[in-house]
Length: 99
Image (cartoon, rainbow, N blue to C red; front, side):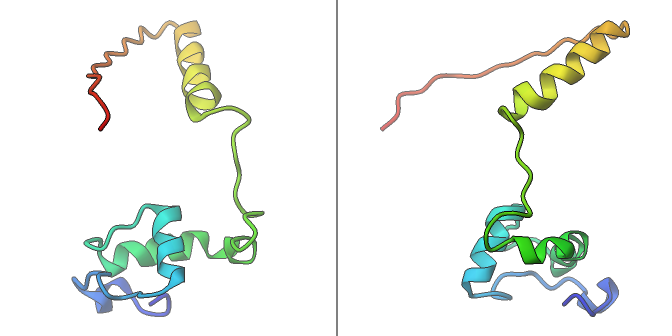
């Protein structure tokens, strides 16, 4: 797959492309779904192939000190507000009873 061009992959989907533990691992890490194209998966493979050695023990992964909101969103909003940007976050959610 990596050695092919996107044009040669056409509109193939990755449904059935992998039936392995690797696929479960890859799909979980990169949010691939079975209906995504092979070309889409190839792009991710080409982008992150250098992480391959660190994937089995997760040393290739980078984690925030805090959660993503506190580590990224809040500092960006603070920066923008400090520079005169009017940031309006409209959040809507509903609480439903868990079954």
